[in-house]
Length: 248
Image (tube, rainbow, N blue to C red; front, top):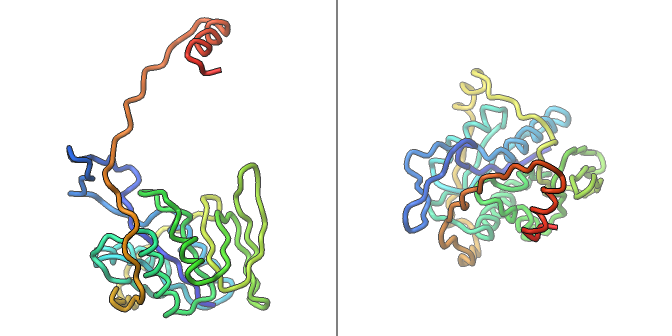
């Protein structure tokens, strides 16, 4: 069973982002990591490989600097890596188109992706990829069970107010949610082995019919400072304050 786990690099989770006066992000000295939801995708791919055999391929789109994050996936246990090479900032549809070319090249049984990236939080690429490939998809997975004999996956999905179980035929796209698993740490032997694992590069020029960018970020803005709270002495006073502020 061949599984692709897509990854994106995002700023480390405790990073306090800074802005320039004209609303651009200050990226100097930023430290990056694998997007946390993508770590779940890699982990789930490894668990499915341990159960069904096969291989896990870590795939990303971007510049050579992303090799560090691919090395993290390889150190966790992925068998090899593939990077669609580009220094351009791609919008979600362009990214999905590049990933679709990589997926067609690899012909996997399953593609696992984070439900969103914690930097942009759009969650668009997985659904666009499923549409481009004309594959079924299941989103926000908290449990994935694959039946290799029938080439189906039974997925428990997080939905508002509960859980929904769906069955999709393979190949398919599945996006991961937080309760799916607990990603393993890259061990020292894993880190040493990762340096010897294959890591291929696919030029962006090999991606046919890459669309023109239809989306761009115009500027970033910081959130307004939070106002200080107010202390009240009774429920009646609380109710009066809420009514005065048109909050009830």
